Length: 324
Image (cartoon, rainbow, N blue to C red):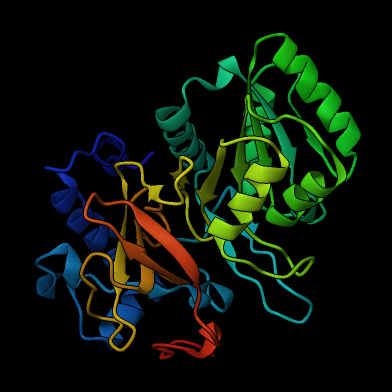
């Protein structure tokens, strides 16, 4: 691993600014497409004195360009997309960095992986290749209790195995895409109060999109539980944020969210003001750690954030200097 990772995975609030500026300098010097983007904005390391000065790369550029500090990589993750839409590709130079990031983050929020059983209801992800979410959940399943496993549409078998794990007093997690969790809730009467449900977002065109609070309310009522959590991640990142049942996401120490203005993508909103979500993901050292997403959100005074939806016509919004 690059020596900078020592600072990234031991980062504290006191060292965050210094480490982040070092990561920006490294990526400006070593990631060609990011350097080109910064140069077009007349932003070089000499111009960057604070974190808020760092340019955030529009996420749509992952569809047209390889965002990487070199040519060699271990694995490539691809985004899901509706028919006819171009997908993003994230070239990951060192997959062990991704594993360190999601393992450390998950255990920070939920405790040791080896002590838990993991069940996954992620049909839309399993039915394609290149999903970073499937990579993560597959690791959890293989390193959790033996009862762990993936399920497509065989929900009766899923419930049988969850029941067996609960009877053995195991700590049980169910990762599920939104539409599959709704299907589960509609088809079965089962008490999930001792299961931590981690909703990973996305109707994937299967059902009408709905705001997260409404989705969670339906799941809580129909699955007889208060334990509906969320995971916020994406193909272009190597880190995740988790919402522990209150629809507010919390980041690991090496990840941070800023909310940019609707009207000026280079200025940032105050707390509790809605705008575009920008993500700093320092684990993404070999690609780009500064991502301008297509999501809408707002930040709270305690550093947590909410995800409120997506920009309309997001692929053509903002700076398009490098698209094409």
